[in-house]
Structure formats: C-alpha cells, structure tokens
Image (tube, rainbow, N blue to C red; front, side, top):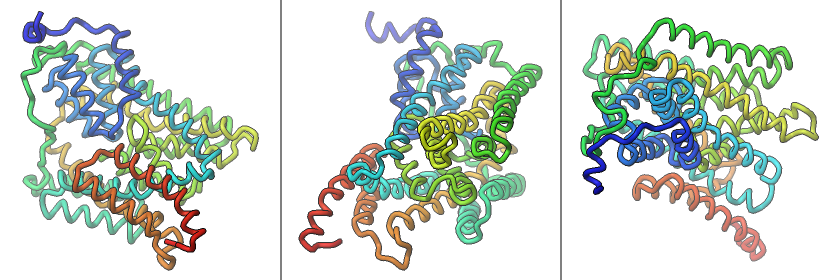
Length: 458
C-alpha cells in the first residue's frame, strides 16, 4: 500500500497501552519550551500518527491558551482526555511532567552537593548570561505578538513600572490588567480583539482518528453534574493534601506554606512560566527566604535545559528550599529536597488537571467570545512588562554581581551579548544557546586561573 492509499483512511483505534508509550516518550523529548512542545505534538499527532485533525488540535490549543497553567501540558492532557476519558488525560498530563520531576530532583542534588566544584560552577557561570538573554527574548517574542496598538503598549509599560519601581505584587498587577482588558473590550473592542488562532488548518495530512467532523464523545460534552463532581474531587485532593501537611508540620511549616504558595502561583500563570516567575521570586526569595537570588537564576538555567514545561523550574525551587530548610535534619538533606520538590510540583499542576477534565468543555464553548478573551489580552500585555522586569533583575545579578557600585563582569557580558545575537539575529534555539554558553563558561573556568597566574585579570 502506498502512502496516498494509507492516508486515505483514518488510522486504527489507539489503545490505552499505545497511548501510554507515546506520552511517556514525549515526557523525555519535550524540549524547547511551549512553542517547541506544541510543534512536537503537532508533528506527531496531527501529521504522522493522525490521532487528531489539525482543526481539532488548534481548537484545543486555542482554549488551553485561555487558561492559567502550562498550555503544552494542558494540551497533552486534553488530547489524552478526549481519546481515553479522564484516566487518559491524567496519564498524558502526568507523563508530560514526571520525567522532568525526576531529572530536576537529580540535578538539584548535583547542584546542592557538588555545585561548588569548578567544572559545575563554570557551566552555570556561562548559562546564567544565556538565561538573561532568553528571558529578554521571551519578552520580545510575546510582545511582538501581543502589543499591536498603543493601548496594549501602555498596559505593558504600566505593568513594568508597577513591579520595577513600585514593587506592587504580581497578583494585583494581573487583576488590574484583566480589569483594564475587560473595560477595553467593552469600550474599545477593536483594540482588544486580537484573535486566538495559531495558524491555518492544513487539510492534506489525511483523515484523522478524531477528525474535523467526528462528534465529541459522551464524556467530552458539558455536563453540570460531572463538572461539580470533578470540582469536588479536585478540591478534596487539594484540601486533603494541604490538610495532611498542616497536621504534620503546622500551618507555618515550610512544606505547608509551599503547598499554599504554589497553589496561588498555579492560578496566576497566564502568559506562561515567564509571567509567574516574578511572583515566585517575590515569594520564595524575598518573602520566605527559601533560596537566594543566585539559586533562583541557576534554577531557571537548569529548567531551560530539561524536558517538560518551563514552569517545572518550581520543582528545583522546591528541592533547594527543602534542602536549605533542613526539614529532617542535616543527615537527610536529599530526602527533604525530594519531598519538597514533589509537594511543590503536585500543588502547581493539580489545577491544570481540573481545568481540563472538569472545565474543558465549558471553556471550549466560550472560545472567541470577546467578553472572555479581552481581559486575557490585557493580562498578556501586562505580562510583557513583567517579563522585561525579570530580565532586568537577572541582568543586574549576573552582570553586576557586586552591585552597580562594583565592576561589571566583562566575560559574562560577552557571553550574554553572544546569546542575544544568536537568539535575535540567527534565530538559534534555546538548547543550542544554553549548550554553547555553558561550554564557554566551562572553558573560562579553566582559562581564568591561567590568566591570573600571568597577571592578566579581566
């Protein structure tokens, strides 16, 4: 049978076991941030396997973009749910995260136990300027898609000033931006109706298992009773876990506070991980003092190099926080870090499963309704200003490690400028930029002592 004949018929039904194999594989290869992950799933599920048509895929993606949380992980959850009911969604979304959880626990242990070694420190030294460039590039990329008029530019500028100069908490910025978007959608809808599409549908991949005209299965139709039941189940899973932590460690215990704090963080991730990182920094570094600014930057650097959603950087934050807090004494540091990382990951991703499994059909029915999308347009505009503030914060700590009164780190500046050039001018991917910058940092760690011995100090 030739390819044309093969593509003229939809593929055979996919078993839960076959789906498990694919979602597990995806969890280990989902590099490249949300754009890369969405592209990988499109190529696999739409073009090659034809499990779902492009129109249905984009329809799912568009409404995942309306939700707080990592859209690529939610998209995987949605497709798994559509194909194999709730357990399929839990499996797909869970396997999207599990490999990254295990990898970051391992990297967290290496970082805390051996981060002082010259080779490890050198690699991280090179990666940090690259992370600054990547965050700046993220602000540019989101801004170029979002800031289409002076109204949205004004919201972005006000958000930057609010968090940079006035130190206003991120949740309040999100609320005000959403309110401005809602008012703008009512009074000036032409400036807040930017559309949610991610490209035109390509009908040439052949019929799909879930095709354009395939009716939604019974479990994917909106049902008020099912929505209420699943909401109560999710509330029980959240409240039960938080209640157990409170019973074991008290409300002010570190693990209990991590559960509560990262629940709030999960509900504020409109616009992707870069948008919520300032809130995580404000809480984890400035308020709770669970880790240092340098450790936060290193965590983002490691998060950029691992598969899974970028918001998985919170797993590293949890590991370092648990280790630093010596929750179970100095002889059980790894256990403390691993448990804290697991707690943080659980509370961060639990809302995403609820949004898809319980609220997916409801959210899908509101797609392209300006009443719902205009507030999110305002939030996304504010996110650009917040991300720019994050880039400024990273640049300050990376390029002026002793403060502005000290001398700038010239080598870090060169690596950072090279990373900016690679991203903006040559459209290099994140992983090559990270690898190249880490290699430059490693080489510098060996070259610097030799230069010092010969009286050359840069």
